[in-house]
Length: 53
Image (cartoon, rainbow, N blue to C red; front, side, top):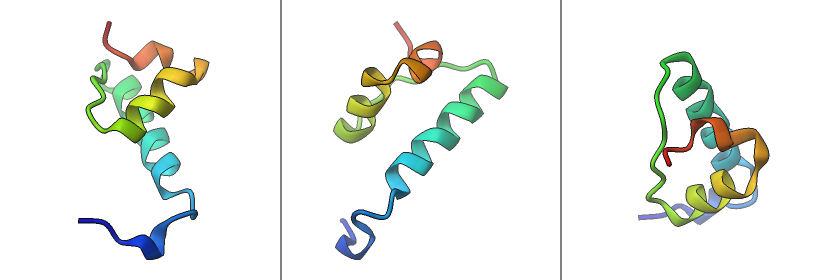
């Protein structure tokens, strides 16, 4: 279910940034399943440290 009224507001990127912060704080790694999150996490150098190999 999606709410298109939220499109274009940067909420997805904010969520990914917070997820990366949490992973770093908890020494955890992310296995992205969501296509959007996967695309952002894999394409940005700043998130490589939290991606599971």
